[in-house]
Image (cartoon, rainbow, N blue to C red):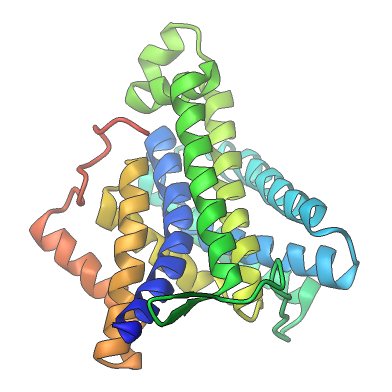
Length: 291
């Protein structure tokens, strides 16, 4: 049982990270019908900005955390204004190709700014690991789980209790009808890009202390976040959370009980399985309401 618990804790930690990345995919798709394959690069940029502001420049962790997330959100706004809104014929395939190109561009810029050397960050606190059932849960894992939980609850409050969140939900359901009701749909699209990018940046911030951070780290994280979003139901926020944790736990169990070589294969095997068995994902498709 201690071995099982250890794999479970690892799966919950990774699953929380995949969940918040998947949440960025899903909420942007729900609002714009766009799959942003540059989402992984926002994760990478958030991590590298935190490393620069906190261990290197010596800013307090809370300030560095907020600035890294805000900077990534602003980058999402710039991305929408320069790369997406300027497209004259916004066909879905054209927009997807643009996001792929933007991801390659962001990797190149990150390589120029931060170089090719991987950079680490200390844990958020020096608390000893928690012992549960003979297994150990790292303090950084506790931070990750708590931050993701607070983020999910904040997103739920935003969508269900604020006028802006309800306006975004209306745009997700029917953009033309929302426009006729006086909702500024372009502003809602811009906000969706900002929030989606900020969620990616937050994922990068919380993962920075448990991985080596470099310009290529976002590619595989973005793909796994996309697999988690598809697994839960693309466009469904709760589905993104469920898919993220399901993927993280399945990945950890496969590594522990089968082979470490299965770590990256599990996500894509689950993606193929869900596409064959239930293409709309565990919790359905876009028609399911957000939070």
